Amino acid sequence: MAVMLQRLSQGLRTGFAVALLTVATYAAAQGVRGDHPDTYVVQRGDTLWDIAGRFLKRPWLWPEIWQANPQIHNPHLIYPGDVISLAYLNRLGLEPGPRDGAPITAVPLSEIEPFLKDLRVVDRYEHLPYVVGLEDDRLRASRGQVAYVRGLANAVPGTRYAVVRPTVQYTHLERAGMCCDIFPKNDLDYRGRRELDFQQFWTNAVFPEKGSEILGYELMKLNVGTITRGEVGGIEASTLLLDEEGREVRIGDRLVAVDPQPYDLQFFPHPPRAQTEYGRARVIAVADMLTSGGPRDVVALSVGAREGIDNGTVFSIWREGSNVVDEVRYGRDREPFTVDFEDKVRLPDEFAGHVMVFRTFERVSYGLVMDSIKPSRVGYHLKHPDAPY
Image (cartoon, one colour):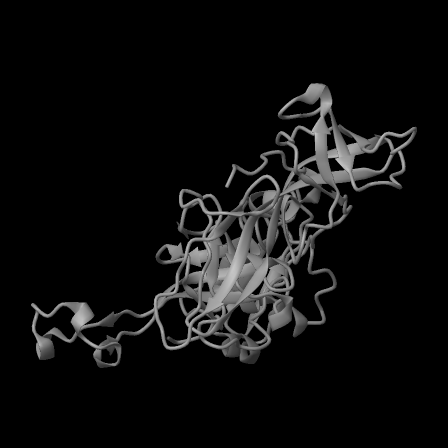
């Protein structure tokens, strides 16, 4: 997958945070750490997740602490320099400090904003208008050049469109009674048709049940343009003037209407509202990191709005326990493939980290790895953040 756009809009870093104020009984219920300091001064670069993690064993529960304290009039205003007091076990207090910086956020928007702006998952794309030609019969076009678009017969000059490219087909394959169903993802060619390319950085996760299902098609934003002329005077293509410093546009790229606010500016971490069946919720891709990633990496997940997932949902990430040959019983010289699957020993799943969803589609969502003790890999399971194993 190509490197994401580096231009970030500072205005989109809308801050929000929470004053960690609570009574002892509620704080104890959430698992206050016993080694907390008497005070903590909010620092530049802090995130709400990091601060909550200093005081709570489960940092994703900070919104519940805020909701339990109606005396907090504005949960969006915690700044570097503010002092969080923990002088008494029965109360957490907030003392305002010098307000000389931007308020802290729950997650670092600067790290996920390119994905928020540039990636989306759709059920189908064949109906979208597409680039049929480029200025001077070029192979590629960029800012200041024009692309000719088919499928916009009623286009109005001045209308803006984003140019996107279908890049990945996410698939859910189920094979009853079989294991190890992890196949490479399906990359798409310039027309959006499936092609097999095992050198790409994004992969599918496949599940050991039966049947198959396409979870969606990932569209990558390339550029933005403005319609300057529609299909008039016998011309069978509309003219789109590209006006962003984005990726180059080519024949076959698709168009979608520009969404002025395509994603949430605020994320309130919370556990999933319902636990999905074991094996159904998995990491299906890691952005720009081949098949593994760590804190602040973006991952694609195999669940979405259909499973009740929304922005802010927090999962724990787990490596599936191995099935090993009992060498004490069978000896070290026994080849694993000669031992029936049911006769092998299933080892426990291994905890890797936590991920928070920041953009949700019908059957796929994107999440940010918040913390980890080992790399998170394609195929790892997603569970309730409190899952003990």
